[in-house]
Amino acid sequence: MDKFKSLLSPVRRLPHDVLQDIFELVCTSVSYDTFLSRDDLPLVSTTPFYLSSVCAYWHNVCLSSPL
Image 1 (cartoon, one colour):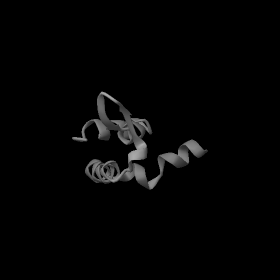
Image 2 (cartoon, helix red, strand yellow):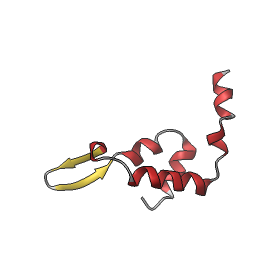
Image 3 (cartoon, helix red, strand yellow):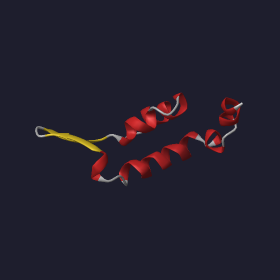
C-alpha cells in the first residue's frame, strides 16, 4: 500500500525543469560539510550523488543538469 501511495506523491508530478531548478538551488547552497576532498583534488559536492540515487526520475534529472 505504501508503495502505491508514493506513486501519488506530489513531488512525482513536478515537471522536469522545475525539479532541475530545485536541484540547482540545493546544490549551490550546500555547506562545505557535504564536500569530499583530498589534498591533491578539488572539492566535490556529494549532494548531486545523493539526489541522483533517490529514484530513476531524479537520476535522469541530475544527469541532464549542468551541475
